Image 1 (cartoon, one colour):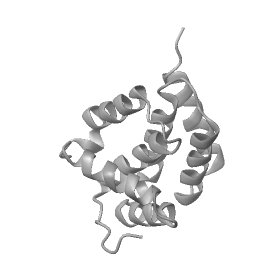
Image 2 (cartoon, rainbow, N blue to C red):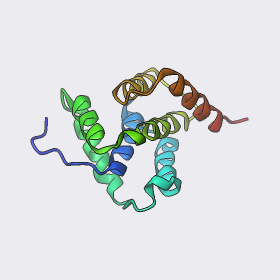
Image 3 (tube, rainbow, N blue to C red):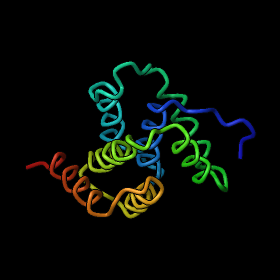
Image 4 (cartoon, rainbow, N blue to C red):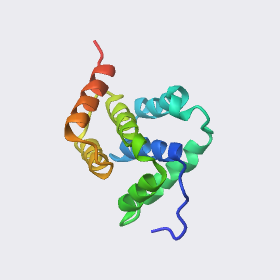
Length: 140
């Protein structure tokens, strides 16, 4: 694991969770990347966020994914940076990224389950969030 992990701001942590979902299957799709950009540009929690931070946060996530205990380190950074009141926000954003391309692969589903567990999202709340994300990204 890298010796000096950066510390995340709360918004960095939210971006990291979205990037983690997108990168989990090692095939980030354009729709997913656009969903991250759209979330940062339009979600009130990001009002004062420096969008130029997305690249550095994304690189940190990718680097951690290459490490043996990188996922644990990532969630440690996320939990340290995020106030508990934003745990469900992180899960909403993660589900939106996962649903944005109209398909949810097994690896992305496993990443969402890990996020759910790590952020202690109640199963009933998670189901509602997941249903809303699918409905929001449904096409004709």
